[in-house]
View 1 (cartoon, rainbow, N blue to C red):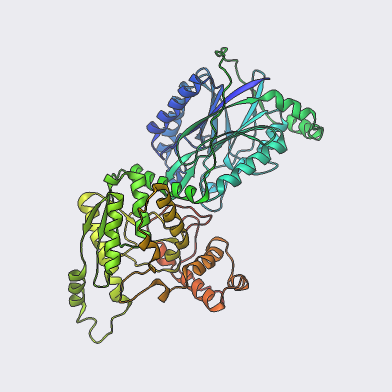
View 2: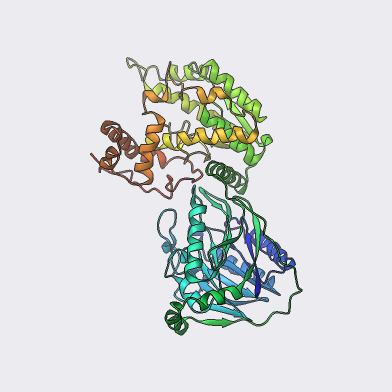
Length: 575
């Protein structure tokens, strides 16, 4: 057995925090050294943080990134380190540096620059063209970056044919529900097809609306996962690989031989100087990490995305309008898990139309969570607004205008608390509401971060149930689940006065927003034609609202924001 020990530093970097990012990397290098790793890898663009977006247009940012690379290089003595950074030549490149015993031994430039969904890498980077392999004594390994491994005949195949027994793939792979399982299947397929071990390191943490879930992997040449990192938390993954097994597996696959000759002619091979013999360390048994269930995975993504957005932006405390409904109750529970109960304040703002039940449940949620609760009734403020507008509105009946006044008064009060105390306002609208414009500009949309903006209404209920199960008690009272959803802005109001039932609405929205299904496709699925046309029209005409909404955690395959680019000025309508 020719054993090779690899470590994966699954870290949570912050864009532009070069000092903090280098500190995390160097600490993990020390850990790798102590554990006897021969190679340790870190995520895509780990040094500058990912995605840096238009900071890449600033020469000072590129320079700071290169100086930070020098610091990591000096820390690499005695082993091999693979780390993501921005390389500058005649252009800039999304790069992986191969640092060996204190020097930069080689650099790999990412070949496939994704330009779909949340990605916009063609805006910033030049694509690489070479796929070198590195020879370190008896071991031949290769490095590539994120998207490169998703292509069946891409750099991984070329490098394996050129002799690489291990491919290290460094990643900034954003999360959406279920992606970790799909990603693991892809990596296992690539490893088995190319008869190569794959060390797949992914970053973890929140960056604006994106969450990176970690779930780093080490997979052997048979496509078997031999080590797995935890999801939604920093981790250090170590695995022992039997590289002799790669050689024997390839002997039994004659199909590779002709392709191998062609690859060997065009693939650079970089020889690395021998390292001092490392102390013998006993074999290790990687800890078992079980993938999370779907709802728990979503819950943890929302918690991590909220925690990192608040803390990385320098806030310590948040404030939430607690209505006694399911949405605000869930947001409060998520905030407590993310930040601690001492850093969350809830505000009840009852109006003349707030029921005794919702008032009581708002207080119960705050008590169950152990958070500060403020009560600021808005009835007298609403009367003052109506008096101020009486002359302008003379002779006109009350309508949605007076309903929206209530939401805007509440938004104004929350922002006043934010200004006075430095609290970040967390908004409580869900994806179903944002989709169809069942929100009020400068009202319930006012705030700094929209925690459940990408969570459809029916999923809100699922995640809230998960909160109660995890706590072993009803943090969210059962009456909140049982009550018909209502904005309580007029007597007897329910959401279904304006919207289809949420189960039906969410299914239509999934087809239209996430799958780009047209009106006829949705009708063919069995939805009423009138309902489909009404929902689609609401989605289309409310883009102007969504553009003015705060960002929120992405948890579906297609979230509003960087995933969704519908024009506001747009006369196209499906019929």
